[in-house]
Length: 113
Length: 116
Image (tube, rainbow over all chains, first blue to last red; front, side):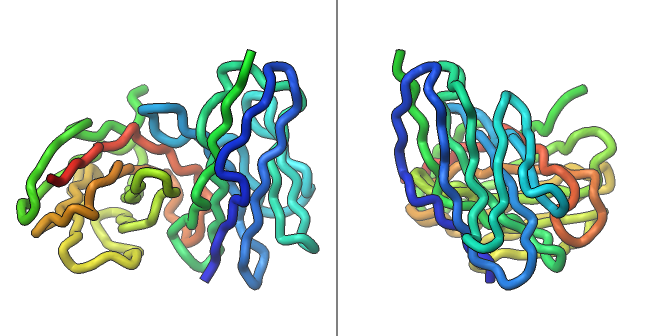
C-alpha cells in the first residue's frame, strides 16, 4: 500500500522568503502525486499534480514541485511567500489501480511579517 | 458555478447516536468521494461512488455507510457514534470515471462532527 510522509509538522517563514515543504512517498510503481492546501475552515484546494513527463511541475499561486524518483520525493517550493500562503499543506499519492488518495499528515506554514 | 456543497457545516452528537452528512457535487460530476480528517492528521479515504455504484471503500468499520442518488448527490451515514468519530468529514467530486485519480478532486468545506 502506498504511504506519504511529511517530515515537517510546522514551518515558520518570513514574508518574501523562499519556502520548501518536503514529501516522501512509498509505492512500488510510478505514483500519481499531488499537493493540496487547506486554509482554516476551508476544504482542500489542489495546488499541482504529477502523473508523468517533466519532473518539474508548475502549479497555482506560484508554487512548483519536483518529482525525484531516486529519492521517492515530491517537494513543494515557492520562491517568495506571501502572508496569504499561511495554511496547511498536504501531499497525497494515488495509483492507477485505485480510486483513493493517501494523504500525509500535513505541514502547517506560518508566515511572519 | 457552485462548488461542492456539504451540510450541515457543524453538528454535535452524543455517543451511540446516528448521523447523516450530505454532499452535492459540482454540476456534471458523477463521482463523489468521502474522507475523514481527524484533527492534526491528513484526510483518510472512506468511500468513493460513481453513478450510484460503490467503487472503493477505505479501512472503516461497517458503522460507516454511504449512498449516491440519481442526481449524484451523496449521503454518508455513521451509526453508533464513538468519541473517535469526531472529525471533519470532507466530500470531493470529480468528473473522472477512470480508475486512478486522473481527474482533479474538488473538495467541499466539510462537515465538522463533534461527538460528546
